[in-house]
Image 1 (spheres, rainbow, N blue to C red):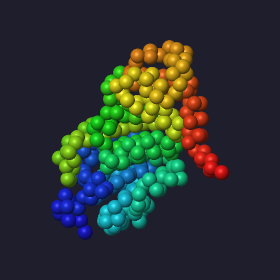
Image 2 (cartoon, rainbow, N blue to C red):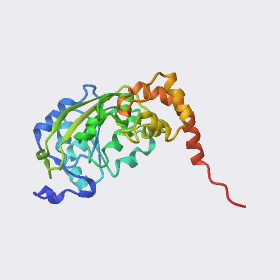
Image 3 (cartoon, rainbow, N blue to C red):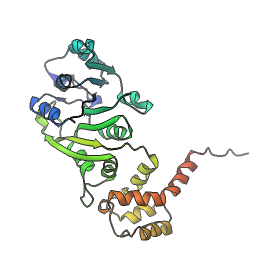
Amino acid sequence: MIPNDLTKFAEKKFGQNFLKDNHYIDKIIQSMSNENLRVAEIGPGLGDLTKALVKARSVTAFEVDKRLCEYLAATFQDAIHAGVLELRCGDVLEHWESGNLLSESYHLIANLPYYIATNIILKAFKDEQCQSILVMVQKEVAQKFVAKPGEKAFSALSVLAQSVGEAKICFEVEPKAFIPPPNVTSAVLLIKKNCSREDEIFEMFLRIAFGQPRKKLSKNLESTFPKTLVAIAFDTLKVDSNLRPHQVATSTYHHLYNVLKDNLDERKSSQRKPKARKP
């Protein structure tokens, strides 16, 4: 049973903020891709967005909260029996362990808890069945995914987003649209994928490159790679060694990575090797 006071029902451990403003729900539906694929909805909550989704598409919804699973199963029993909605209870990351969230091509739509949002989006980047990502996230997080080289918000997330497709902010959502209202402004982020990319070594490389954003990129890289190797890479690719990480284009990061990755491969391999026991 869902109480009238939703502020008492929302679980802090799940980062629950229920979107209850139909104006924004309609805008999310309007922002969906026109391609008629199944929708994977993460965190349906009380089902306000789900009600609109099942009118347009077939939906597989993933809900971690057992209380909400019971509520959704009762509320959407007709849609479930009709095969329009499939409800999966449990942690969506456990469903994702096989590599693909669904066995067919799909669009990801979610009002994500802020603490897990980035991890979910990065999972979707690697999922070859995921064709687009339409998610509600904290505004500052959305800005990192859509930032262009030269902008202060440009980050490793920007590079990864540009490596798999095109990202844009559809619109912002004010706190009062939620129950309970979060302490930050939200934004609906759309990423249309043109490929999938799973490369842990490249992600490691980007963490090093953006490790200290105010430092020069060359200095950040020299914290891991031999100074002479970094100098040769910058000289070969004609990259200004005085540039900060946010000033370097995505294509340049890929070129630098291709020059330096053998060194990272060796480093990762050495970390995996078990230490020899003393005789």
